[in-house]
Length: 324
Image (cartoon, rainbow, N blue to C red; front, side, top):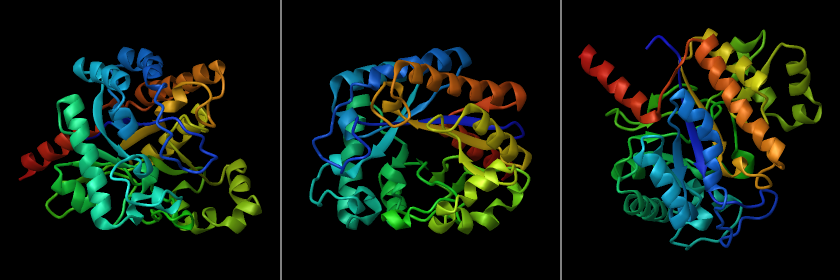
């Protein structure tokens, strides 16, 4: 694989106020048909996104009908996204810590993933093979559960980030490129694209403790480093990240030898008023425009190709078979 590859993963979920406590009654999915706005770009460029869907989406007939149509036409792939607070069985207290399903009892985490997997299979006619943990809450038992249920790809990791202060996982020392989670090379981890750019980009991992420090944040050290052009950490997402910054990140990572990238966002961001990133119709247009800008830059300026998570895994397996 010589040309850079890019896949899109959409966290396809219910709408809720991100500033308020988690609640089981938040199950509206009115924004799902708004994904058609992004497909005006995807269809023209031959991009096939992966929609990882959670329980409220999988139980809404209108949402399922829309997404099933995309899947049927070869315009989308469907995976699984677990928000534990809205996914049965409801045997845990709803709170911030339990919103990371890695903190749930092993049997309960398994029951929630299994229930949702069976539901998606029934709704879409195909067993899902791609999984993404809600709030990136991949835990010590998650891989075992996924392998048992037939999953072959996980995309929960966020390299260089630490969610431990909020009760979540610590991803500071995980790879920023796809890697196998098991010795048998069955379950592939495809992390969210998160990395560094600037004059000191190659040394970014050395500075991650500083960039993760709350004291440094209070002193605005990360901002000073970014404005100086020395070092900045970013992620490949239209949510709160300009197209220019995303392009700088991808260019720096390609220069550093990286070859696989995932662009991610939340489905409610394609309708006004559901996420902090999109509050008006103009914001929606700007949001889709950022996606298109980054995709065209990746293809035309970096010589990249568009793919899906499942195609990438198939390519890795084919390369392994050829080398054997």
